[in-house]
Structure formats: C-alpha cells, structure tokens
Image 1: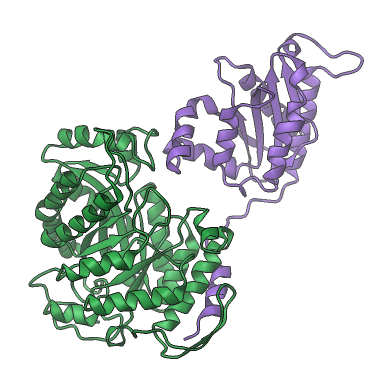
Image 2: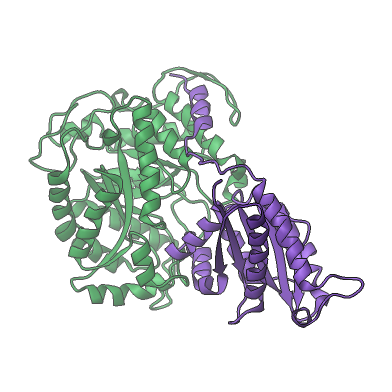
Length: 380
Length: 207
C-alpha cells in the first residue's frame, strides 16, 4: 500500500496571525513539504493544478521535475491534472518527459476541475466537462500506446501521422488514476480502462465514498480487468495531529473555522463526525484511517491533505514527522496484515519496482510493492 | 394498492406557526379526498425551522447532515409535495428557497406539488403565482391549479359573494393534489447503471 500527501497549493492567510505567504514562499514551501515527505518515508507526493488565484500550481510538471531532481524514491503525482482544459497532446508530452527525468517515478490523476471561468479561459465550455474528460483521455491513452496516431474528435484539431515524444519510458505509460467526488461517469471511465479510481474522501460523508467506489469496483469487473477486489482504489484524507488530542483540536480549530472550503459552516466536531476529517492523536488517526478499509474494501493508495487553510510550513513539517514516524509505519503493517492475498498493490513503473529491489520487471500494469522494505512484491 | 407518501414542507418560523397550520390543513384535505377513493396515504411534515442551521451548513460544505439528508430524501421520494412559505419581501422566504436549492433539480420532475403561502395581508397573495409557481415550473413539477394563500384575516372569516373562504380553497387545492397523486404511475426504482456512458466510452476506444 502506498502512503503520501496531496496538496491543493492554496495561498491562504494564516488566521492566527493574519499573514499570507507570498507566491514565492508558497512555492518554496511546497518543495520543502515534498522533500520532507521523502525524508519521512512516504511514497507519494501529488500536486494540484489550478489556473486562478489564490492557487500557485499552474505548472505541475515544472514543480514535479524540480522535486524529481532532488528526491530518490518519491512517486510524483497530481491531484488533479485537468483533462478537460489541457490539451491531451501536451499532457502526453509533459508527463512522458517527466517520467524519463524521474526514472519512472511518475503517475497522474485525471480530474475535470470545477472552476467555471477556467474553461472559457482555455477555450472550453464547462457544460461539456464530462464529454471533454472522456474524449481527451481517450486521445491521451492512445498517444502513449501508439507510436503514430491518426485521430479526429469533437474538441481538438485532428491529428494525422502524429507521434508524441518522448515515448513513455521503456514503453510503459504512466499509471493513471481518475479522481471524482460525485460523478459516476468518471468511476465508469476508470473502470472501462482498468485504471485507478481516486476518491477525494474529504468533503463528503463516507457513505457517499462507499457508493462511488462500489460502483467503480463493480464496473471494473464488468469490463474484465479482474475481480472487484482487484480494482485499484485510492482515497484522500485530512488529518491534524498532536500527541494530545485536545491540543490538536485547540491548535487546528482556527484553521478549520476559517478554511476556504468549509469554514464558517459546521462546527469542527460536526464536520469530524460527518466526514473523514480526523483531528486528534496519532492513534486516533491510525484507527480512523484503518476504518476506511471497512468503507471501500482493501485499497492501494492513501493520500493525506496536510498543507492547506493557512497552516504555517513549520507546522506542516511537524505534521509530516508525526505522519512518517508514528502513523504510516503502523498503517503499513496493519493494512498488510488485513489484506487478503490476491489484492494487488498499485501499479508502478517496472524501473521503480526494480530500483526497489523487489524484482518486478513486468509489462504495463504489473504490480509492485512500494516502500515496504523486506516485503516481496506481489505478481499476478 | 400501494400506500402513497405525501410530504408537506413548512417554512414557518414561529411556534405555533400559521404556515405549519396551513400545511397541516392542506395535507388533511388531500388525505380525505384520497380516503374517499380508498387510497391510504402517509403524511410527513418537514419543518424547515428545525433544519435552518443544517441548510446553511450544506450551502457552505456541499453535503447535507444526516437529518437534512433524510428530509431531502423524503421530498425526492414523495408521491406529492405540499410547499408552504410565509411571504417575505414580496416572495418566498430565504429559508424556503435555500431548502429547495439543495434538492436535486430533477427530483421534482413530474411530481404533483401544491403551493401555498401565508402573510399578514391578502395584498401579497399573487406572490404564489409570481414566485412559487415559477420556481416549481423550473423544477418541472406538476403544480396544481389552485394555490392557497392564507392572510391573517382568513383564519377568522368566511367567504363572500366573490370568493370562497379559506376552508373551501383548502378543500379544492387538496382535492386537486389528491387526484394527481392517485393517478400517478407507481414509483420506479431507478438504478445507477451508466449505460449511456458505457456506449460513449466504447465508441471512443481505439485500441
């Protein structure tokens, strides 16, 4: 099982001192957070993509390429890559290039984006969000698998005899996750291709996440990729920890109360009860996270949102220390013990599997254990 | 015959509330008319006052609390809806609108809805036809022809040579709602199978 963090990249005023970081500070902080993730033994760092203030990450592969050069093991991913408003040809090129530079430590998560004006700014129409996601991904999928592409669709200029370069590293395209909170069409799309499905799992009650993942698993089996239990599932999560749970609540409350997404709404207590948010001791986070398994079944990737709502860098780095030292080692062990044989790990590039010395040298889609020293890779 | 489900939504704010009283009277009228046809009906009344904080929180977070979720679900699954608001500043109350903003835009399609309102003076009665009726028309509900407005004075007067009194209007509106509910086809249990998207994806698969 993979553990990691995902960031939105918001520039938010710290409600406890009224100070907002500059864009430069926020960007450098994001890099520091990614490096810390590697240092404390996490597997994945994923960045969001946004094209409007107060967000900074408009250029994910620039950011991830820089982090790639400064890390050895971290898998670099996105949360999410806008499949609707980006040209799929540019996604194919940018992420293949990143994959080469990072020696295969790359996957990505497709998302539609829900900021209305971004669509017209990039020449698209939000009412076509789902058809754009479907057609653009079909083209991206083809560009990474066929050397010479002839293609014609509804949204993009046709391609005749086009070759996307560089070709994916060793001919293995980056693994793709599809992220969606509430659109069953996206769960269907992930199932259709046998790709991963990621549920953000932060803003909605667990029952909703359960239904979306159950649909994806059922349809994954329907399309013949394996049993429902073998489908590749990722979840988001949001935690704030201190040794003492009362200290965690006291420290996090002003950030919660003023958070851009849900602030000035329900109480921290109600939101904690109704959504997967956990504010408390490391043990509470361990218990709650293990509980996600009861909701969606055995899953492959857990990402935590740690650096939003104006939390200062120092605090975020402390949180990552706790996550890496006290929480993730226990979760790795517990999840591995609970997981039945036959449930695969999330696919990684064969070069990554080889570098980790678990001897997985398979074709695309071959599964490999990540970041679990001493655990042999599972192969199917 | 399957038991019908009637949900009355009252946006009254005081307790006791004349808006709630009107909702109850309308529900009874519909119930009586259905009883004449040997149709059983289960009535549920939703008081939006009790859900006021939950409604505001849902607007902020994007998801309902369990109690509010149950209320939205009840409206969605009802065979008929009675929607009653006090008239504030020439229209339905903000709370009333906020609740219906949280109901899925397709949830009321084809559903019989009776609109009613209360106010201090009869001068605001056309708000029913200028505000509530278009709201439910947008949601593609079947709004019954008679909308019932109860001004304070209506609770203590009978009809005159030009107008029926409040009880007669309640009976007529409740009867119209009952007729639509009784003739409505049985509920279909919808599935979440995305058949159309399966075809769309298959069309786009090149390899």
